[in-house]
Image (cartoon, rainbow, N blue to C red; front, side, top):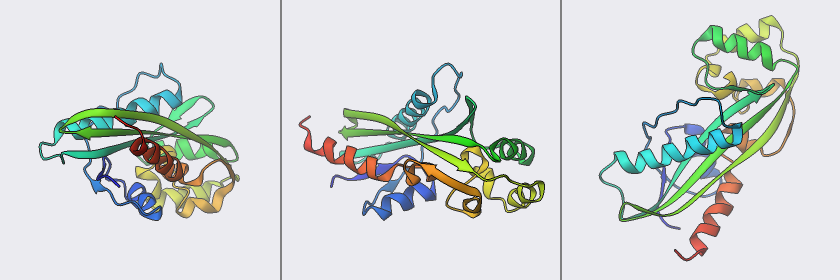
Length: 198
């Protein structure tokens, strides 16, 4: 396997790659993540994942001669509204009230950039979606969950792999996609990319 660079410091994404036997060098990128809301959610996360992968390549001078850069971005969508990471506890409360006893859809966009001598030779950008159904959350449960600190760095103010898992009724789709990286899809796309001639 060619050298992999992960343009993210997310411990969850690193762990998901480890679970499928892939090691990646972590090189977070300072990409512009502002969105104007005109793109549908799947295209939004695809665009943001590309920005992150491209920014990692652009920002860092000591890139390996040959590698694949992985960029990823995850959002939660409820009733057509994109829920990113909460700005503060009040914002987390607002999101969790919306998520209670409802279905939300998690979209993760992934970009794989094959790079040779700092030039992009292949680009594969795709997205996956998973529907998540939750049980009702009481006021006390919401406040306790916010108090745990877990929601604050998560899209949609929840992490399915953490305490919030107790409120998940069912999911329809890939669990790892909700965590932050559709790992099996990533592996299949990597395999295809490495088998293609440039």
